[in-house]
Image 1: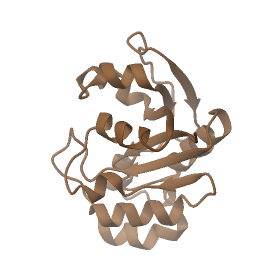
Image 2 (image 1 turned 180 degrees about the vertical axis):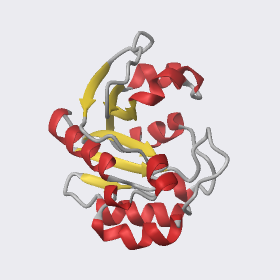
Image 3 (image 1 turned 45 degrees about the vertical axis):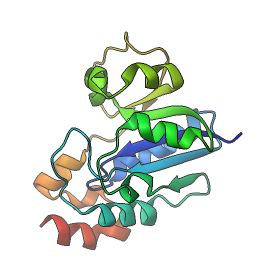
Image 4 (image 1 turned 30 degrees about the vertical axis):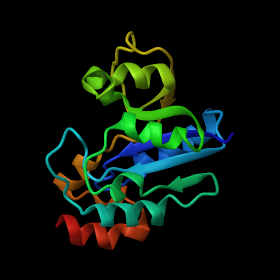
Length: 178
């Protein structure tokens, strides 16, 4: 069976930090494929700034790599989808070994729907862009994905830091977030 890692997120917008997470995951994880899954709507948020169609389009445009697939699974549901359902969906087709998250999410994992099930079925791949301390004591198994990119989608939206997005989508990002 094909071994995969899932990298879900809002990607509102996708940026160079996301690229670095993908590069590091492809380098360090024992996987055949990395599946990027843009959320229709993050279960912990009430809205996104860009449309689901825009975010999916941007991800497909900039994450082109032979071992990377950008999936429209969550967006196709036209509603917020919890990670446990996404993992279960892909387990029907692949050996899902890793779920990639940012270190800033570790503290709230116990609030995720069906956290115990997720924790039993995957290895957490934790990306961190700086010296964030995170407590992994509740995680069954995890691996470190250290990256050098002190940027977030929030920073890009609030200060319009367009230099931190791929050149192929800079004009589109500027129009949406201006």
